[in-house]
Image (cartoon, rainbow, N blue to C red):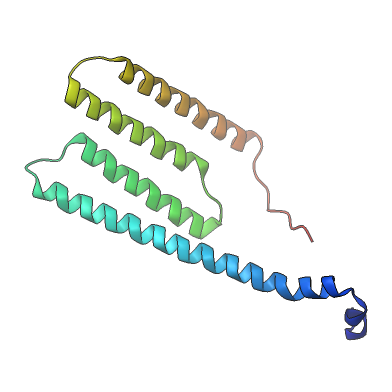
Length: 150
């Protein structure tokens, strides 16, 4: 397309051609700032939790699971930086770990079986099934390159 042909385009197409690169740059900048913020908050929270654990006489299982949650969130941020894709499986792992923390907290407080523990156990089972479905689907139907739509 020559410069003469560009001026023959309708005004809305010319404006779109000028604004799209700016919009794409803004989205990319936002993603990077958000990822750095999430990564920094994760590191900050992890370090704070670790220092609190060190101040206690011992580390509980809940404390260790919380550190694993921070590790999984950090891994998600790292994977997103490298691949520009959010791994859904890691979100499921975080959810399973968080529900496990709730079960342990309930058992530590109540020391008896309850329907809450049964419901939370069912939640973990449902999340594990969801993880299996996601893994199967990603193996059976692997994502190719992202298609560009012009």
